[in-house]
Structure formats: structure tokens, C-alpha cells
Image (cartoon, rainbow, N blue to C red):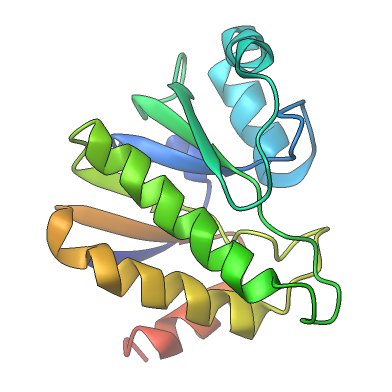
Length: 164
């Protein structure tokens, strides 16, 4: 089941939340900064031990002080006009995140709008990729949440999911 939530991903009680991370897995702004503040300093230490994460890949840590048991860190592509395999890399972010969750037998997962903030990916295109990947894995999870931070994002996802 795919659900749509407009709110704070750090408040969701799911098996895993996905973090839109940078490739060094160092503290950033946006979703990453919010997750790190809510999870506590232990998350930063866990990310330091992991090292780097290439664009399109994903890594897993515990959730520490979050309601979510785990955080899946994935690195989305920076939008460069669509000619640098951005769509394929974004597909891989979702796919790799789902695979990590399945490897741990997790049943619920929440995603932010990956790459649409400072990375500049067009929101409609990014949401279409996200929803397509969510539908591929829908029957393998009890709950998949698209967690939007803005009403604009919520309207886009709602339309793509046939909720509006």
C-alpha cells in the first residue's frame, strides 16, 4: 500500500526512513539535516564509519533517536538538464533503498522527495520516477509512504497516485 503524507519524515513510525544524503554522508541541510538533528550524534558517527556512498547507491544505519528503526541513506543525482543519466540514477536510488529494506525484512518505508531540493531535479519528473519505483515494490511492503514537505509536492504525488 502506498500512502501519501505531507509532513515531517522524522516523526514517522516506520521500519525505515530514507535520507536524501550527499555522497560523503556528511551532515547537510534539508531532509538530511532534519534527520540528523532528530536522530542524534550517533547517526553522524555511524555515517562516518560507512564512508562514502556513490550517487544512485544506498547505505543503512540504525535510526537511533528516531521513531524509525533504520535510516537508509541514498544519494540522488544533481539535475544537469537530463543529459547525464539523472533519471537512471534516481531510479537506482529508490531501487537500492527498497533492496536494502528487503534484505532486512523491513515492512514499512518512507521516502522524501529525493533530489528535488538543492539538487534541482524537476519535481514532476522526480515524482514520476518515485511513484513508478514504489509501484514495482508495492506488494512487497505493508506500507510505503511518499513523505512530501510541501503542498506543491503533495499535489504532484496525489495526482500521480490517482488520489486527486
